[in-house]
Image: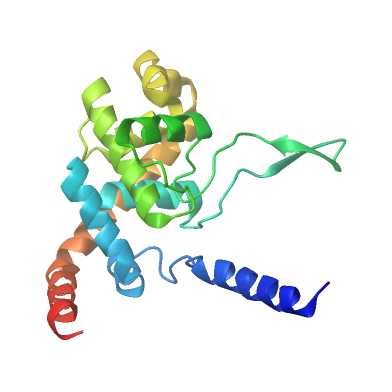
Length: 205
């Protein structure tokens, strides 16, 4: 291999790996999350303003889905314990969005350059889904429990009550709701500081 090419390849790999944002150090505290990843706060506000979605709901759902890992995916399944046969689904990224649903989002929003491993795009996707859930099934955008059940089961599955036979899922949805409520309370305690810090950076940063 030509050494010039080798250096260029290594540099490119380094740049690509550097673009990935690591999960927040304190995922249980929304204020700490936004203090650590300022751009995430901007994305959350953009989602709120565009889709009318409260900041805390998609963040609580995202934590449950991926623990804020940009490349999260379902675990690999194996035949006979050692032959890989693929993953349980094609869900991927921060929002664990399935390919078909992501394609619907892209088609409806025109966000053709979006990526499931990009936080801003994942937040916009979740805002779109929560907005659609409100329109299709009449679920409040503030109802994290019911929103998560729609997110997991799909709009048709939720209407059919498919979650009612899945006690484990109902428990997970309750956990998402609890986290959303904690995030909401935390956000109220630091919103003014986050916004003033943003203005300070705008004019003096």
